[in-house]
Length: 213
Image 1 (cartoon, one colour):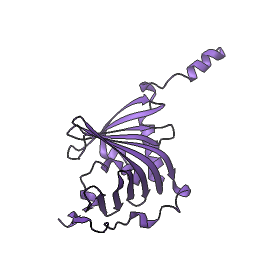
Image 2 (cartoon, rainbow, N blue to C red; image 1 turned 45 degrees about the horizontal axis):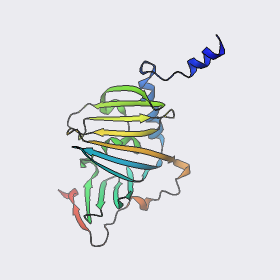
Image 3 (cartoon, one colour; image 1 turned 135 degrees about the horizontal axis):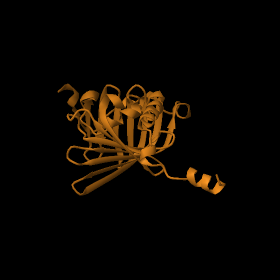
Image 4 (cartoon, rainbow, N blue to C red; image 1 turned 45 degrees about the vertical axis):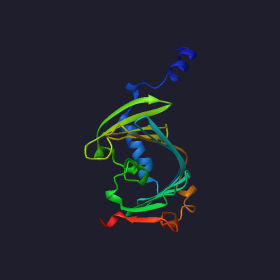
């Protein structure tokens, strides 16, 4: 085979028919279920009824079930989980709320993969995939229609990292996360302290404890 033809075959773009969806899903599961700690930069975009809101910040995670969404835009906004409860604070309202982790009706629920709780076959019944931006874009349809989202789509890289995650609500709203600068385990273990996942309402903030309802 002429070398030019051989190189041309190697450089052909990935086709949908070439995608091994099972292998890709397994690769994503292994990458995140094995990680003990993660730190990522995120851009969060919420679109609904022709409106759009864009926010940014840093995300810190540590098993089991702990996460901290620390926003730089808007500055001061927080979303924290200690594994049992979820706490949120919005500076523009000066309002904080506490909720049970399992009962939080929040579109962040599909981010279970970041917390090491990802088992695609347990939660989703159908997968569609196509190549995109040098990776694989997968749309997953949940088994239950009682969840607060209708479908979850994500773009994976060759290393099975999640580059982008889109969560579509039943009202056709879309919550999109773009992730960058992923660091995990030994590279950040000492930097992610338990104190990051403890929440104390700012002085003077209205505090609502929904966990007792």
